[in-house]
Length: 278
Ligand SMILES: *[C@@H]1O[C@H](CO)[C@@H](O)[C@H](O)[C@H]1NC(C)=O
Ligand SMILES: *[C@@H]1O[C@H](CO)[C@@H](O)[C@H](O)[C@H]1NC(C)=O
Image (cartoon, rainbow, N blue to C red; front, side, top):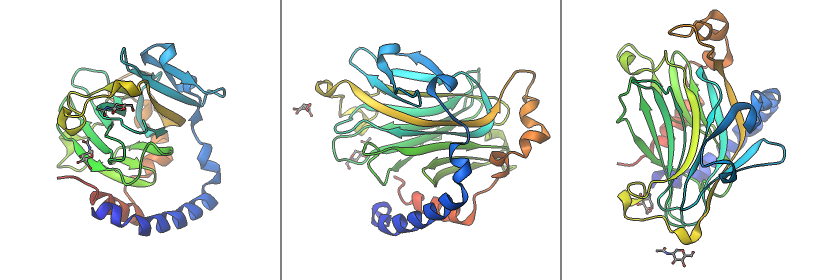
């Protein structure tokens, strides 16, 4: 697979880029960092399925035979950069689906979706993304991750402004939807969204189309989270689109001004395209 062959080259480039970035971005690394309880609440599964770290900045979600678990943001956001670090279920994770997504929770909903489809030990994990606008989805795209997402934490980010929605894995854009005149009717831009994550049993479809079931001898299954960064315009009601979030102040925020990919990002996007699946 071209995607994994080029990893060595990219690892080198990324190391250089990371060094440069760490010189210039010292101050922005903690921007928007919140504790779990500041930004989120439990959606289902209950308290004993969600373990918090002592400092409240990391949580582990579990799935048992009885139930999966999930959390949701307290606020709705209209545009922003929404990101968190995830470390997924190690070993045989067949049938276990972990997702991180935003959803307007309205009729004819808008949604941005990262879904990790578990797989047998040692087999690559598929990351599926999807976009819904006005209730229309069916825009799934799948890539093989170029690393084992259960080995350590990686950052998953949704960048959303007037001009583009970008799905990032670490610093790599893997998918972009631009707000062009042609895509106008597909571009979510008026409905604020909540942020969600969950771990659940998807073994009727997730792994090899449902052939590989959850192996319950390995339960409970854990997905780990940390470094929650919800940098966005918090929607406080008042119209459609939310007046605050489309005001001049917010159009000057850094996430709004990142309105197109730079050259390095474009090259990375092209490269992650080689991780795609037919
Ligand atoms: C699991 O691994 C196999 C073998 O590499 C691969 O064909 C399959 O697409 C992977 N993912 C899923 C979700 O089945
Ligand atoms: C399920 O997991 C157990 C314990 O790890 C293992 O012994 C068994 O072979 C697994 N079953 C399948 C069908 O993979």
